[in-house]
Length: 154
Image (cartoon, rainbow, N blue to C red; front, side):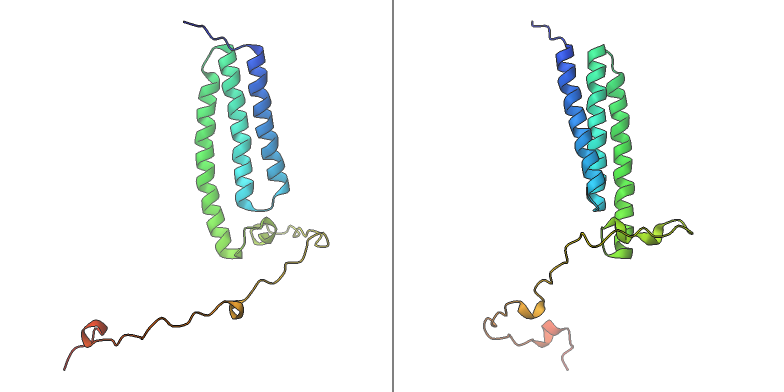
């Protein structure tokens, strides 16, 4: 039986991957304005931290890292439930997932944050209903019988 040891080189590899996940999540959280992408980026940061905890726990030969990772997964599940409720409620109010459009939930008395719109590209109008193709009718429209229409026969 081959005994496998968790060396410092293995620890360095796991820490590098954990740091990469955390950095990727941080970049995604800071650069995106879509709330769902922001929550996914926060989850990615939590997974990077969890991987780091597991690696340190394995390196030191105890289960403390695994226990912390289970706690992180529990917190992430709770965060996902709250995030889903928040996204649904705020989408119903603003009809958008853009975070900058949700100024109505700010604390009273704070000025609204307005971004510089000169950097944004204008949205091009998409094709409307008038440009959709029209299909020809397929066959003869059937007659509705008295029984099928739900009316009583007299």
